[in-house]
Image (cartoon, rainbow, N blue to C red):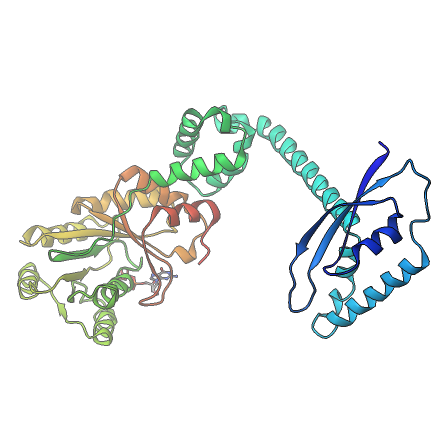
Amino acid sequence: MAIRQDSFRVEKGQDYLAYVRDFYGDDAEIVTITQVEGRTPTSPALVEVVVAIDDTKEKKPLVNKRAVMQYENSVKEFEKRIEPVEENIIKKEPLRLKLNSNSQSQKVKDDKQLLNELNSKVDYLMSMRWGELAPARNNLEIPPEFALIYDKAKKSDMLECHLNEIMRATLKNMPKALLANKDAINRYFTTLLKSMIPCRVDSPIRKQKIIMLVGPTGVGKTTTLAKLAHRYAYGVKRYKTAIISLDNFRLGAKEQLAEYATTMMLPIHFVNTQEELQKSLESLSGYDVVLIDSTGNSQYDKAKIEKLESFLKASQSEIEVTLVLNAGMKYDDMEHTYNAFNVLKIDTLILTKFDETRAFGNIFSLIFNVKKPVSFFSTGQNVPDDIVVANSEYLIKCVLDGFKG
Ligand SMILES: Nc1nc2c(ncn2[C@@H]2O[C@H](COP(=O)(O)OP(=O)(O)OP(=O)(O)O)[C@@H](O)[C@H]2O)c(=O)[nH]1
Ligand SMILES: [Mg+2]
């Protein structure tokens, strides 16, 4: 081809024609002039000039003296203008890069190409390893594009049967055309995970709500109850809130909750017997929310769990039982604890200590298996701030990318 195109960038308002003549000769023609950068407080607007050059014609020297001087002058001018505000390191580089726009875009192209090549090499290596590891995946035929998401889900300590089930469902239901697209796979997989987690909708309270927190020792029942009390009493919608404690024998337990109640100016009743509980609930019938704290019980201590059951059975009020579990527990312990406490007919779950955990797949598997909605996640020790209304998006982010605070 005899006609070739070239481009350069100059300040808007400069004499482009003089540049073209000086750099490309009299026969060069301007094809387009486009503004590529707007004016900013520290730099002028720039335009890109595309030039057509007829190489068959006799060549004139491309750069003449006048052009060189003009070029150097305008560089100096430009430098002077940006000097007072720009940091030292970027004083000269941007100008050189802007004026040599062709070499800049070439460099970007080269970098991009290199990155693409590296990416395909990584993909290739992963797919080779992927093939080797097939027996570890129970020979489930999963395309290598799933490697990353499979790996993340596996590292989350999700039960293997769940992971395989999700993989099968994704492979089966995802449009075939998208199976080679890693982003589409991630999106589909994430959506599927989200749809598998039931979360309690945090709807406005219309009739009195009585919630009892139960669970193993030290999981954060009392702390979570204090956060909930604050949320109900002083949240966007304010409810008349009261507290009842069944945990009155342990040293310090009474004081811990009494202090929270006093600080929040909420009534608190300490009850020891079934009759006292019933009387207390009757006297608090005018309250929108009543939160009941219970003594922590080992999941292996049947007698204590049965005692709690007798309190619930004796009560004539409708009490929602919320099992509080530490998110850091191993799956087997969680399941065992759930089964032990389920004699109380668990309505909902609260998971605590998100900030102390790195793998959340165990929670995913538990919720998926027991099919009980989660109402809150506790994300730290601070009362009342460290609590999040449970939502599947939040949990799945933690499952795949860990807790980010
Ligand atoms: N890191 C972290 N610590 C928490 C969280 N929730 C509670 N804790 C801490 O866990 C410890 C026990 O909390 P409590 O609220 O007393 O636990 P509990 O379940 O009432 O304990 P018992 O009544 O003894 O069964 C305290 O030091 C709390 O500050 C949480 O989400 N993250
Ligand atoms: Mg407690």
